[in-house]
Length: 455
Ligand code: CA
Image (cartoon, rainbow, N blue to C red):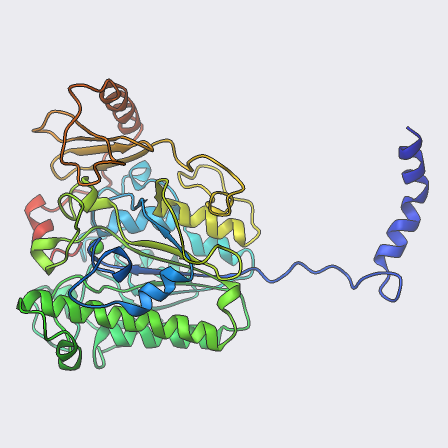
């Protein structure tokens, strides 16, 4: 009681002292500038197709350097096994099935990320961030769905699911040939598209180096069509298979872009004030683009690990431990709340992702997620992951269960001997029952596995 009285008596004087500037008090307190946030998203990159995950037939030195400067998320997942739903999850922090974003929007059909969903740049703008999207959008091409209508200050890139990498290369798909958008102005592909996107990203960072910025750099590489410049093809000429060689050259361009962006952050003395994520939007569609998901099972479009577990790095030099790895399951859904938390904003309610920072720093033990779920309408596929079990089911298959820590290849079904299969089946059905039907009809499942699938 005496202490309270004493504090009360002196409180006015304490406040007076604190409000002064001068020898008695510090300068008026100013919250430190929040870190920049950069999300580098590859498209259809195979799990094994980065050096830090065992790549052997070519090299990704810049992505590897980023991984060495940060934390490799070895059980890093996306929320859907193909493009647009995965991106909808990443940018909302909510499982996209909650709002019916179950399929890729068809170009020109007026389909897109529902307008009542809040996406990451809208929230970061509240903390004074300048926000830019560069690259593939694929969340609706109609004007109302475009990035600058959804909270991004700037956009350079393509609205659809893919694009030819050179001007007038002659792809069959119309959306692959239309001009790029530079803040609403139509511009052609100049040179090689991946390099052009890198330049747009560098330009964004240079112009906004003084402000906290959020850059969403969504390369369409190495999604099909398989097209690469001669100079990069020469660098990987030891690869005999022509399609794998072209894919390797495309990933090399992506790697160069990562190197240029990370190098610019260093040049601008922003490395320690920038949180960087690198990941792929889904697993490699191995038949379509000659990617490699080893040792994971299956490909893009499936809810096996090869469809949803992706190369995933988070780096923040000086804050997160460099050169380490984090093994519990994490999700692309976690990017939103993590970015919002480091920006100093209250994390909105209703998210499925969690702020990873206390887990990555070691302050909070235990896994960020006890359960992650997947559902793809193509083949009525379902999956669930606990820290040590993976459940998989599709319409024509009985439930499967894998001891995922020892069996990341999902090669030995243990459903007959492990009662966890029934628990996970019920949990998955309950999760699915919460969701509305798809907000728009889908394309055929077969299209997912072709090279120009828009996904
Ligand atoms: Ca993709």
